[in-house]
View 1 (tube, rainbow, N blue to C red):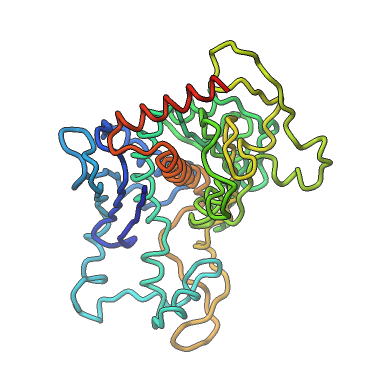
View 2: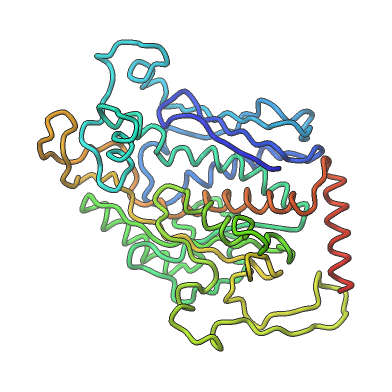
Length: 393
């Protein structure tokens, strides 16, 4: 059973990710882990925090001589900003006078709901854990799962379809173009359409000039997924439900779409469902059944069907505004402007990278449930046997 968890606060000493269930013998590419973390920090419209941090996944356990050993993998991501917060957020009692309370909860953030839930007098501790900084630990764990999935022929990448009102005219971007974005040495808005990216950049500039923030839409593509992951047998085993929940768990994601889910709701069935063909026994493909389209997004009945898995995340504008909205002071209950902390204007590309990680974690867990194996040799052998079964179907 693949499991992961994260710990740490936004301005604490470090973040920690723990991933257990990866088979022994997987070769770990440290440079790839750190590049994934670098990708998460990029994008036009990021704030000052990204200038402070240069994330590195420091592996503490579960990997020896460059390979996994079957035990839980623990990774530490140092927070460079900790030096500025040691006295304000000490582990010990410290000096209460040096605490930095967040007195005016921000509309749209977890501030007020979290303070009410945990009976805090201000929202500082809520901010510290609810912050999207936590997603860096998820990206580290997801990067390990990406390395594992590559052994099964599965690749995962994302691209941006919209920022504010600027959208890609043709949303059907080829896989090669999406994959190439991840290899770029400079990330603007992670859009495969240069003209659309220029309009997206203008949307960010407008938000910056008015003290506002801007959201958008990203798409995650899982390429090379074999049919048969997930299940229709029980509600919580459905792959579409697992993926939607995983991506919705990311901060600021307010909606998830699989395939043509939104437009399909207003279309007749004849224009929605993907017609099935048969390619014959050529031997080059894993399965001989074909699809004329992929409006289902690679999922039918909660099970992968062999097509690319297509998932879109709809990201609201982040809730920390340089021109704050109305709020109420925790102590006085009087109207005030919401608190402002150093923040971003646009995080859509970074959210796409976080969503890649969550998709990788779900697919890796489902793959291990289906193929099993305590070592990579055993897992790959089981996977290859299943692929042979599909070829003979």
